Image (cartoon, rainbow, N blue to C red; front, side, top):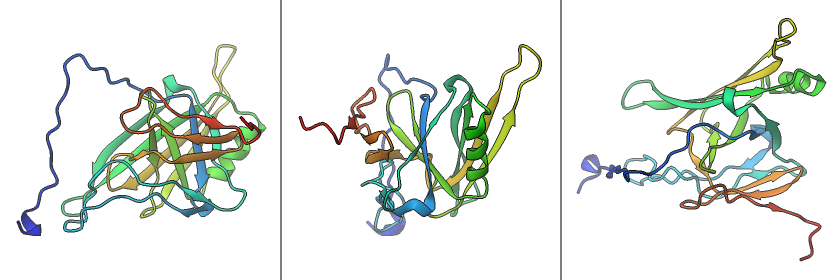
Length: 206
């Protein structure tokens, strides 16, 4: 079969009664792309150049002393979506993340300034426990931040982080390590749910 006629399509079935949980969980991770020394690989078909899986291979390699930053959000007000953009044969996906943090304190205000005008990558945990990546090597990530100090006695404060990132597919899955200030998390592996992540305590000799 010639490369021009090659198809990477496969059946997409659904088991009656299976559950797919909506939404994302309350803890995200983010870092400037400048702190990433190496990215996990996107496995591609050698003939067509199209991705052959939605799961990235390997882990992010960070610069010395760099760690993923933690962002706690309000899941009920936050969302991850993806939509097609462009035209064939150059169509891509625009992955969008809305992350609402409940505070407007000094740290939230400073993080807003740090995220603006930087090229960032985000890790999002879905309700099935899998980690999705928002941000890619090929295109810059646009991050904008809005703050609301609330109105009146019943108002609500919030810092809303909005992310737009072009990629070759809807936010790909990540199964590598997440190195944070609290320890190293092993992301969930395909077929294991709910979240199989664990924090490795460097001080635990057992």
